[in-house]
Length: 281
Image (cartoon, rainbow, N blue to C red; front, side, top):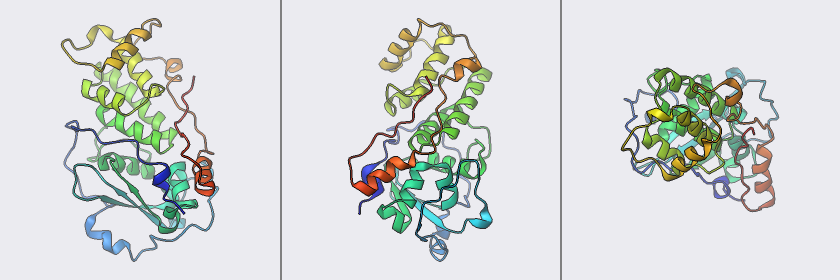
């Protein structure tokens, strides 16, 4: 039996120099260190005997969700992992990635514990907040800044949660229109460092910046790949803000069967399979 993360390791490294976006961290009820020991007495390690085939339309209820799972998130710049204790029914309901890990034939399915290495704990906390509330806000309950949205979208892509990707993208489009500003260069650099050429968020940022090409900052070092994409996109003029029809090109499809990709690996011990979410053409 293998570890789930051996086949599907984190491909979402924390930035070498994190953007200055960390607000004062309030005490969280989801992963307080002082309650870590107490959580062990709760049914946190209840193994899943079968895969729950709940559809995306049926949201789990707290009264029926007793089993807890543990996700240890490790940042390269921190001494130890940040522990998140989450309701298994909720995180597996929204994420096929975690559904396969905790309900599949992996070691994590028995221990109900998963380690995410080289990940950004703050972004994972935003992800967990969304799992419970479906609202996008920062850790202070304020409106989510654009520079938070890029890493959150990438995390949602990794965890196969297209609903969160699309909600984040719609909010980003609204905020960029309201602020009449392009994303900061370090945010664009972060996106290009942590995504592939096929990333729909890249194409959205390029389309947005092209529409406001005249207000790009001068004497600013933009990523070379971004500038090439921007020039190539110039063959198809788009006006800012992006229309609903244009936005459809950057939203991602929802595939409730994605977890089967992970389970196939755990059952047949095959090589890792690409799980990149497909962008709407």
